[in-house]
Length: 63
Image 1 (cartoon, rainbow, N blue to C red):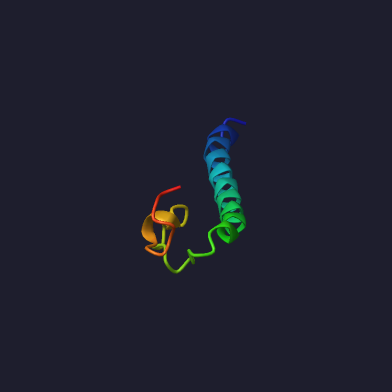
Image 2: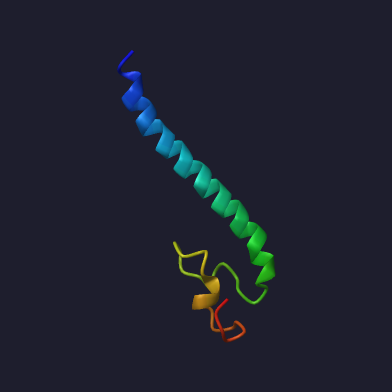
């Protein structure tokens, strides 16, 4: 069936992006205890992976 090919081309990247988001969020919640001085409220929404760049209470130098 030729109509299944475009559907798979659309579904595959969306599933990949969804899994990537789930992996990144799970990694983020495992990484946060390593930075006790940085709380999620210190980092702006949409930039959760670089809290040490936005927090003034850190060690003073980037990772």
